[in-house]
Image (cartoon, rainbow, N blue to C red; front, top):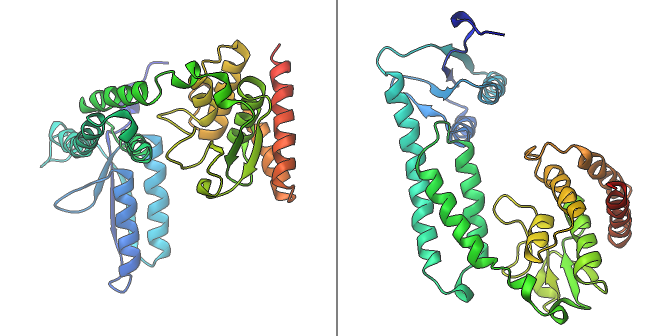
Length: 308
């Protein structure tokens, strides 16, 4: 269907609001949310975002919250600002993201100058998460984004140089693997992958503190060593790539687990939602961690065979 000019979405959303002077803490809360949304403050009044369904929903919910705080709020669809041309407003959004990306670039360049053993894995993970948060607010495709992506890819290449795939099998044979309690869909599927393709004699322990099990290999938890989320990959994907597992069905399972764990619909796979809900249901029944993991691994084994 052809969209006529009158049906086109207006380009901007404007939130104007006021709160009673006694609501100082709520004022700070609203300001922080607007910062997280990437909203641009106007000198005159109000906050602006590009008009899309996600931004409109965020501002509508925020306006509702402001009214519940005894304040006044309106979300207005704006075609243009007479004192701020569209090009200039777009540039303000680009400039804001440029500052964010430049900070990331500086930190990444410092890390990449270090020898591999001295590179802080936790810091790289933090930078990857920051990049994802910034990219979500990059409404106008800032050119610095691709530079950050390139450096992150270089970090992935160096930090994950197929060393695990080439490592001697004995290095990962008969080991203990540690992860957080109450395993969910990424952890149970990762445990299945470990035992089926990497370490058939693997033993699994649960702890919030990997240092309590120094001989164990951490997975899907914050630890300097081990295997976890990297870039846009969930732990299952990281393990599959690290150990060069090329089984076609495992690749399909990786897509299913990614979408279920991260919820970003990257691969458009919905099968994992059911697996996730079953695991959540068992956890709510107080099924012990070991039993939860065993049942979850059986689910993934069934999925593997069910893929034909």
